[in-house]
Amino acid sequence: MAAAEPVKINKVAILAAILRRNALRREAHLPLLDVLALYHKEVAYRRSRALHDANFPALRAEVIERLVAVRGSEFIRTRPGAWMVHTETSRLLRERFSI
Image (tube, rainbow, N blue to C red; front, top):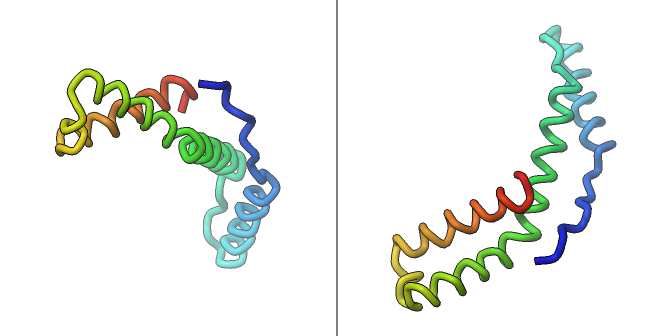
C-alpha cells in the first residue's frame, strides 16, 4: 500500500468554531472551554476520520482477499466472518496509520 497522502484539515474553521462557542459561553456566564485542548482533540479526530475514510475500503478489500484465500468465500458472508473482516480492517488501519 502506498504511503498516505497528507490530510487536508481546515484548522482555521476548527479554531473559529471553538472561539464562537466560547463567546456564547462567555455571554451566558458559563465556564469557558479549554480552547487549546479542544483544538488539538478536534484536529486529531478529523485527521483520523479522513485517514479512515480514504483507506478503509482498500484495506477491507485486502483483508477480504486474505480471508477468502484462507477460509473460503462463504466465510465472509457469515456473521463471524463479517466481524473478522471489520475487526482486522480496523486493526490494520490503526497499525499502518497510528490512529
